[in-house]
Length: 205
Image (cartoon, rainbow, N blue to C red; front, side, top):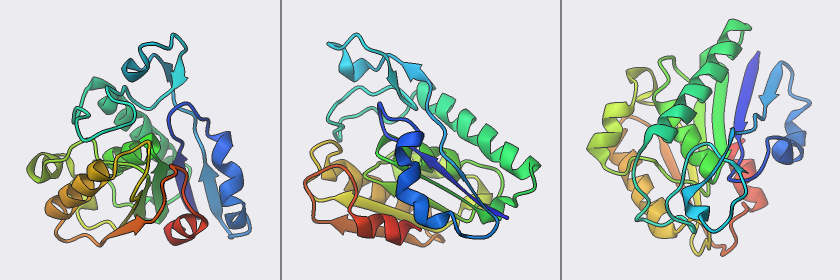
């Protein structure tokens, strides 16, 4: 058995991503999980009283390099991801056959939760995302040795209007510094839109 745990972006739902991975349905033994984030008020949307599905709070939107690096709500997301991974392992899926990935805020959550997970994973994917910690040293302190060499696919739009490319590039630099033994693929994609191009999803899978 193997599994994909995929995390959606801000204000979306897990169901909103299932169709994008429909081509994986025929893989024998694959379990695909698309959880939905808890609903919360997001600080960056102060003018909007609506509650949004969000893995953690945001201070800037569009998400910029000035976004604070970490917080209690990020750690809450990590706990949720670890619990989901623990359930997969308890159900008989070896952790080293599980890929954790996500889009936008989900990509940031996938990196935070995956790198700190105490069992080896098959790989991590972040599309249009960033790292919650962007100092190589501070990020390295959160990485569990089990995933110090985990393969990572990280893609970013060069003119993304929702997640600044400067933030994505700084995030990649932090990953490279914190994970010298890992194979980190950084794909700079020529797009101004936030959603991924088809080739990004193909490369990630």
